[in-house]
Amino acid sequence: MKILVPVKRVLDYNVKPRVKSDGTGVDLANVKMSMNPFDEIGIEEAIRLKEKGVATEIVAVSVGPAKAQEALRTALAMGADRAILVQTDDEVEPLALAKIFKAIADAEAPGLVILGKQAIDGDNNQTGQMLAALTGWPQGTFASAVNVEGDHVSVTREVDGGLETVKLKLPAIVTTDLRLNEPRYASLPNIMKAKSKPLDTKSPADYGVDTAPRVKTVKVSEPPVRSAGVKVADVDELVAKLKAMGVHS
Amino acid sequence: MKTLVWVEHDGSAVKDATLAAVTAASKLGEVHLLVAGSGVDGVAKAAAGIAGVQKVHVADNAAFGHNLPENIAPLVAELMASHDAFVAPATTTGKNIAPRVAALLDVMQISEILSVEGPKTFTRPIYAGNAIATVESSDAKLVLTIRGTAFEKAASTGGSGTVEAVSAGGDAGISSFVGAEIAKQDRPELTSAKIIVSGGRALGSSEKYQEVIVPLADKLGAALGASRAAVDAGYVPNDYQVGQTGKIVAPEVYFAIGISGAIQHLAGMKDSKTIVAINKDEDAPIFQVADFGLVADLFNAVPELTGKI
Image 1 (cartoon, each protein chain N blue to C red):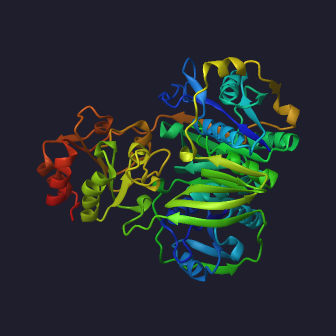
Image 2 (tube, helix red, strand yellow):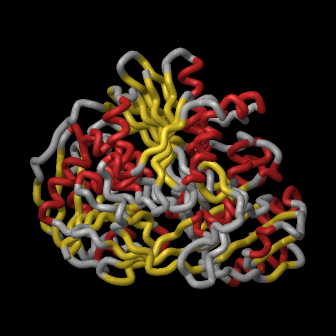
Image 3 (spheres, each protein chain N blue to C red):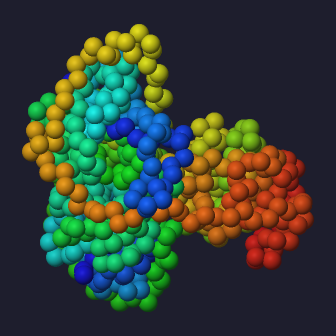
């Protein structure tokens, strides 16, 4: 079984985003960029399925500028077999991304597509579900456990209030949540080896997908700032403050 | 504009997240609801009573019993032929279903809106709430998810919507529900609680969480929460987690106990009306957002607080 894993290059999760002063977006010049953490979990899960003998080949895909290659090289160094870069300098929305991934899924015929549940820049949480709609495949979103059993996959999902397990007919779409696994670090020899793994470069037009945005960003602003209040000296003062607000047993 | 709001329910009662979605939808136009499930007459009647609701579409079918998006999304897409906007609360169910509906309609969804600025203009958080984007849709129809803490809840009574059965849809035959482990708690749900008491890694163990955090929550009738660090350390189950990757909450009062205040955590609770922080590290970032900060050893201060409050 082949597994397709889309990955996105995003602002590193340890970097505090700064809104540009002209209100057009978040400043991405000269800041550290990394693979979206949820996508790393997707690559790791695919590798584990290959190590278990369930998967035979892992194809990593990224849609983005030439530099998105870095995320793909990381995926290859972790253990993906080959990569496809769909190169574009445009911001591509989840719906258009899903259309590109649908075209790739048609060509590659994977048994599973594993995506991050969301990218930590746009926080849309849409692409996997949209790809599932376009392919007509079932979806196991926010996965904390994935088990392939014959022609089905059972996915345990993190839902409000606990966990839920669904059984999906293959091929299927899975989106990852944080607790699915802990991604491995790529070793130096594997980073070297990844440089010679195949990486194809395509364009959205090769897949017949129009990436013109449907949603216009009017402006991007700083969130309202919360200012620090007061320090209380002891528990008695805190109790008095709380009681004044009507908070008591 | 005619909206169709997804009713989140547990088979017998309408969940609060729905009420915030109704408020958001009412800013766009006429409010219709969709109740899907198995044996949901009671839910439909309750939903029709929500203030401002004009009509409730009821799809009663065993195939809709567990909110499987493979079965629900085609039903919603069909109903959208006669509606202009699909509005779902940004719960795990709403987030699972809405994008599948959007793609079937060839619409780009707008996720987790914070406000309605115009007929097709909304604000939404990006970068974990570190920036707020104002966005405008150019699609003919809208698909929106609603951040529940950003909208007032509509009154759950006083409405007089009509109820209409929908016969569309069925089992797509590609997915099935196996089971669920839903934590049973005799306390308010995190996302709708008026008071939340959350504990962090400084507690050091699951036993200490039970000994220190739980009695204060019991005394105040509060929901229990935790930081990601406390969840990852195994002190409490993951559904306790407040933060960007957990639950987004905005109670009247939020107690952050032994929580340092990582960006991740702040993103989930900084809209709380009043934040109380207890931490022995006076430089902890949590004090930068707290209305009342107490620099103290939590193992002494919290039991004292529980005794005196």
